[in-house]
Length: 218
Image (cartoon, rainbow, N blue to C red; front, side):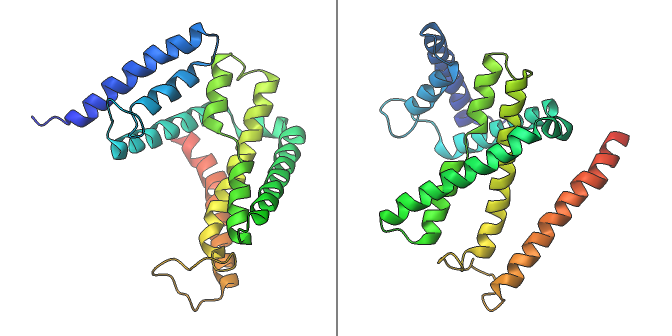
């Protein structure tokens, strides 16, 4: 029977170091997440000692994020978001706009072109859902009104970032970049953008109409 030794070693060393440094962080009255981050740094290629399989670690990290976001979806519904919409929606949109503009302004002072500056600004405008959810969960604040507002705020940010990532390939040429390999470079960028928006609208409609009715029935 074959065994993937690299996977076993990575899990054993990773969880072991996370346990040790998470405990140390908790004893220092810091969030255990800080200890987990230190453990990740220690097994990275940038530090001496044990080096984990980077490719495998990235896949496991993506799995962890997917499970965490699935857990968020189990605890937070669209109705919950609507309850805090008067704070979460305008607050998140305003925060994204201000952070993006600040990032664009600073980047263009560095001599970056507008496309690169916009991507940098958008990157700064989005908080880490993973980090904040872990911190709120550790403090037992996920079900509080402040916790719901924070999660709703993060969900709005995530939705905006998903839309930005979906539109990025279609707007790459407008932002000074190059068209993706294999794409039709002769096609009008506005037509490409329109098709992309139609696909996004179709997915949202499928998710909210068919998924909302079909999944509960199943």
